[in-house]
Amino acid sequence: QVQLVESGGGLVQAGGSLRLSCAASGRTSSSGAMGWFRQAPGKEREFVAVMRWSGDSTYYADSVKGRFTISRDNAKNTVYLQMNSLKPEDTAVYYCARRMGWTITFYNHRNYDYWGQGTQVTVSS
Image (tube, rainbow, N blue to C red; front, side):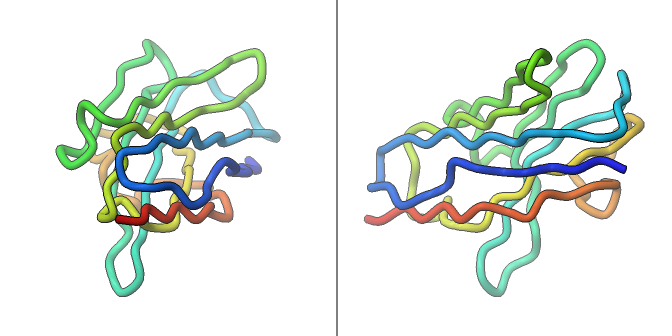
Protein backbone atom coordinates (compact mmCIF):
# COMPACT_ATOMS: atom_id res chain seq x y z
CA GLN A 1 0.00 0.00 0.00
CA VAL A 2 0.98 3.58 -0.64
CA GLN A 3 -0.31 6.51 1.37
CA LEU A 4 -0.37 9.96 -0.24
CA VAL A 5 -1.05 13.17 1.66
CA GLU A 6 -1.45 16.48 -0.16
CA SER A 7 -1.03 19.91 1.35
CA GLY A 8 -0.52 23.49 0.27
CA GLY A 9 -3.86 24.40 -1.22
CA GLY A 10 -5.65 27.64 -0.42
CA LEU A 11 -7.14 30.85 -1.74
CA VAL A 12 -5.03 33.06 -3.99
CA GLN A 13 -5.68 35.96 -6.32
CA ALA A 14 -5.31 35.59 -10.06
CA GLY A 15 -1.68 35.91 -11.04
CA GLY A 16 -0.49 34.52 -7.73
CA SER A 17 1.36 31.33 -6.87
CA LEU A 18 0.93 28.25 -4.72
CA ARG A 19 3.03 25.18 -4.13
CA LEU A 20 1.32 21.88 -3.49
CA SER A 21 3.08 19.02 -1.75
CA CYS A 22 2.38 15.30 -1.85
CA ALA A 23 4.10 13.21 0.79
CA ALA A 24 4.30 9.50 0.02
CA SER A 25 4.74 6.64 2.46
CA GLY A 26 4.38 2.88 2.47
CA ARG A 27 5.33 0.62 -0.42
CA THR A 28 8.21 1.96 -2.44
CA SER A 29 9.11 1.47 -6.07
CA SER A 30 11.79 2.86 -8.34
CA SER A 31 9.50 2.78 -11.35
CA GLY A 32 6.15 4.15 -12.34
CA ALA A 33 4.88 7.67 -12.11
CA MET A 34 3.59 10.34 -9.78
CA GLY A 35 0.90 12.54 -11.21
CA TRP A 36 -1.22 15.54 -10.33
CA PHE A 37 -4.85 15.74 -11.38
CA ARG A 38 -7.59 18.21 -10.62
CA GLN A 39 -11.35 18.18 -10.53
CA ALA A 40 -13.64 21.18 -10.63
CA PRO A 41 -17.30 20.95 -9.57
CA GLY A 42 -19.38 19.19 -12.20
CA LYS A 43 -16.36 18.30 -14.32
CA GLU A 44 -14.31 15.21 -15.00
CA ARG A 45 -11.04 14.69 -13.20
CA GLU A 46 -8.34 16.00 -15.52
CA PHE A 47 -4.64 15.47 -15.93
CA VAL A 48 -2.33 18.29 -14.84
CA ALA A 49 1.24 16.97 -14.71
CA VAL A 50 3.23 13.77 -14.26
CA MET A 51 6.78 12.83 -13.39
CA ARG A 52 8.22 9.51 -14.44
CA TRP A 53 9.85 7.96 -11.40
CA SER A 54 12.95 6.75 -13.25
CA GLY A 55 14.66 9.38 -15.35
CA ASP A 56 12.63 12.35 -14.11
CA SER A 57 10.77 12.89 -17.39
CA THR A 58 7.88 15.30 -16.95
CA TYR A 59 4.74 15.96 -18.95
CA TYR A 60 2.12 18.67 -18.62
CA ALA A 61 -1.38 19.42 -19.78
CA ASP A 62 -1.40 22.17 -22.39
CA SER A 63 -3.50 24.33 -20.09
CA VAL A 64 -0.74 24.53 -17.47
CA LYS A 65 2.40 24.23 -19.57
CA GLY A 66 4.80 27.05 -18.80
CA ARG A 67 3.00 27.95 -15.57
CA PHE A 68 3.18 24.77 -13.46
CA THR A 69 6.24 22.71 -12.57
CA ILE A 70 6.32 19.23 -11.06
CA SER A 71 9.37 18.25 -9.03
CA ARG A 72 10.36 15.89 -6.25
CA ASP A 73 12.58 15.54 -3.21
CA ASN A 74 13.69 11.92 -2.95
CA ALA A 75 14.98 12.34 0.59
CA LYS A 76 11.54 13.46 1.74
CA ASN A 77 9.54 11.13 -0.54
CA THR A 78 7.64 14.22 -1.58
CA VAL A 79 6.46 15.50 -4.94
CA TYR A 80 5.64 19.15 -5.50
CA LEU A 81 3.51 21.11 -7.92
CA GLN A 82 4.63 24.71 -8.21
CA MET A 83 1.79 26.74 -9.68
CA ASN A 84 2.51 30.23 -10.99
CA SER A 85 0.41 32.78 -12.85
CA LEU A 86 -2.73 31.17 -11.50
CA LYS A 87 -6.03 31.78 -13.25
CA PRO A 88 -9.61 31.48 -11.99
CA GLU A 89 -10.03 28.43 -14.25
CA ASP A 90 -7.35 26.65 -12.23
CA THR A 91 -9.81 26.48 -9.33
CA ALA A 92 -10.34 22.82 -8.40
CA VAL A 93 -9.54 20.11 -5.92
CA TYR A 94 -6.03 18.91 -6.71
CA TYR A 95 -5.06 15.28 -6.21
CA CYS A 96 -1.74 13.50 -6.37
CA ALA A 97 -1.69 9.93 -7.60
CA ARG A 98 0.82 7.13 -7.85
CA ARG A 99 1.13 4.48 -10.50
CA MET A 100 3.53 1.63 -9.80
CA GLY A 101 4.47 1.06 -13.44
CA TRP A 102 4.93 3.49 -16.32
CA THR A 103 2.28 3.86 -18.97
CA ILE A 104 2.05 6.02 -22.05
CA THR A 105 -1.54 6.76 -21.06
CA PHE A 106 -0.35 8.61 -17.96
CA TYR A 107 -2.99 11.28 -18.62
CA ASN A 108 -5.83 8.88 -17.78
CA HIS A 109 -6.73 9.03 -14.10
CA ARG A 110 -8.13 5.48 -14.27
CA ASN A 111 -4.59 4.16 -14.73
CA TYR A 112 -3.39 5.18 -11.26
CA ASP A 113 -3.19 2.86 -8.29
CA TYR A 114 -3.17 5.20 -5.29
CA TRP A 115 -4.68 8.61 -4.57
CA GLY A 116 -4.40 11.30 -1.97
CA GLN A 117 -7.37 12.94 -0.31
CA GLY A 118 -7.13 16.14 -2.36
CA THR A 119 -6.47 19.77 -1.54
CA GLN A 120 -8.64 22.71 -2.58
CA VAL A 121 -7.16 25.47 -4.73
CA THR A 122 -9.31 28.55 -5.26
CA VAL A 123 -8.18 31.38 -7.53
CA SER A 124 -10.15 34.61 -7.26
CA SER A 125 -10.43 37.09 -10.12
